Length: 341
Ligand SMILES: [Ca+2]
Image 1 (cartoon, rainbow, N blue to C red):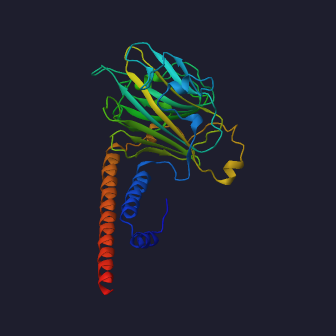
Image 2 (image 1 turned 45 degrees about the vertical axis):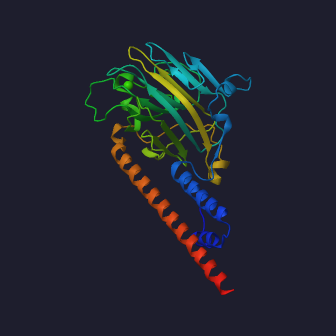
Image 3 (image 1 turned 180 degrees about the horizontal axis):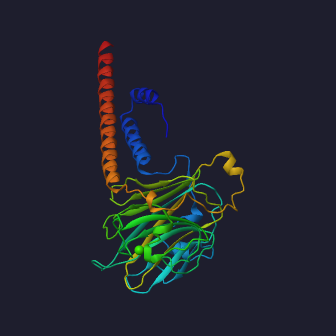
């Protein structure tokens, strides 16, 4: 969001009406707050077909419903429960309209929680895939899938010498040829990932997945500070249009509640070439999949979030002081001019 600061100050000083003055200051605070809080591009816009929020009854009760539930997944008035905290459950939530634009961002408000103290699992997956509503062994969806999986894994299935702490968020891009090995947490084909302690939080936990200009960025907001931190960035990711968004989870011996609370989808700006290009038949691909590309941004993210908040608060205080200063300056000026007459 761009604005001319000089013009804004002149405008503020020129305001004679006290109410208008404070209204403008408050609006400015709001604009800055929105600008800092949400990762989507300023010129993006929400897409209703691919979004989901309370009350869900209006979403699922109509014949024009854009969402479909599979397996054991249930819609309550407060959340969509992919699986309950019960053994051997599997289910999914699927968008029934394919995504027709090349660049998009998906923001998901979710909650993973349960009774298990040390043993719980296994997490859930967010999909952008060619074939919706399938079932299988990969967090309730089919192996050898075609498309993108963002996996929010809560349980390490192997005792291999992992350097990562779980829960762990990872990205897998598959053209249908790769096998996701649950016993190795998909380690061999994971493109990137980050640690993210999203389980059992009382606060809101959110993830944002942005795909634009062949760049995949995953953000998290799990600290409940309403600020996004980068989980990982992968360039040279090729995904076609006309795939479907979906969410799945499965429990085995271990279980947890995996809840989706809301989904907001934004269509992002695409460059002209990309818009003209027929992207329907692009084969999903990404740079060679190794855990070596994995980045751990968690501590840095917390720090950068705190730093970001500090700067926002400082900025707001400065604007506030300028506003108050300008207000009293105007008041004094008016007082002196009234004394001249
Ligand atoms: Ca796992």
